[in-house]
Figure 1 (cartoon, rainbow, N blue to C red):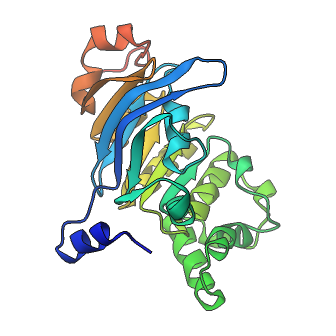
Figure 2: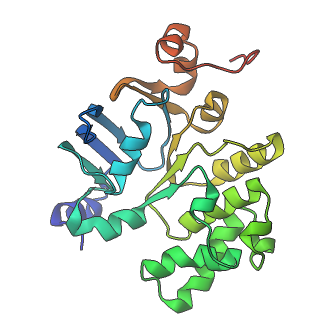
Length: 256
């Protein structure tokens, strides 16, 4: 059940943003501070890249979005719902995370069964599952592979099937963890074509700065657990001092 405030805002046509993070602070058991007062807001339909060097806190932040980790201070709201025990089941449906390694998400005998697993687990009635699977596979250009084993697909095809398993749950926000990693140029382009057609809110965690520029008009730079920059992707990538300070680098010869 949605909180009364969220229902009221939706009736008035004032839908809350897809994601609100306010003052998020988290330290691991060894005392290392991973997030230090992180705040950000992603509106519905926005495409935002989350950039930063290794160890910046990007993965830690993502794990707070669906309640895998719980912050010492601060809050996270997804479509107006606070991330916490009372809403955790719904939050995990609304935050669709596509992991860097598709093998972490594909474990059923066929592609169609993998795509059906998530929505079935979230309570979608059996008579609606086939339509969910068909729509998700069509969205990622994998309809013709529904009866194949994911083990027999290429790396790029597995990445798109992993994306379909999340899309079938109709998430509020799509979180992509290094989507272009380990893909050959053709598979990279095919995935970009698919992602470019989607109308879901998107948060893309990536070191691939050209991919961020291609798919996300806005970028947020996180370093040492702090948001250090937030603005149009092209403007941020044109700031060599910013990139150097935070160990970000464009490919050799790449021009903006």
